[in-house]
Amino acid sequence: MNYTHLTQEERYQIYTLLREGFSKRYIAWRLNRSPSTISREIK
Picture 1 (cartoon, rainbow, N blue to C red):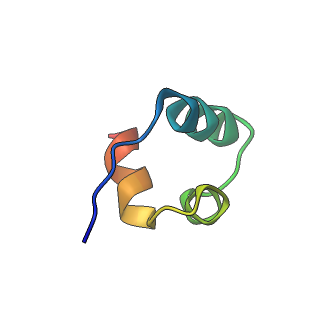
Picture 2: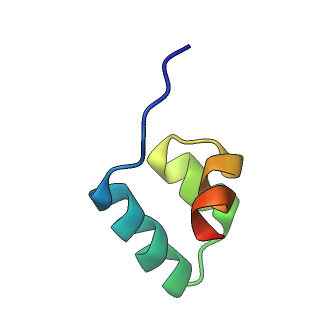
């Protein structure tokens, strides 16, 4: 299985979408990442 780091652009999108009130699950779907990846990034 290949693992990739989040890009700076993805990190920016995560924080922008969170500020706009979107859920972690929606953000994960939008970025094609797992919800746990998004949760770990937010911590």
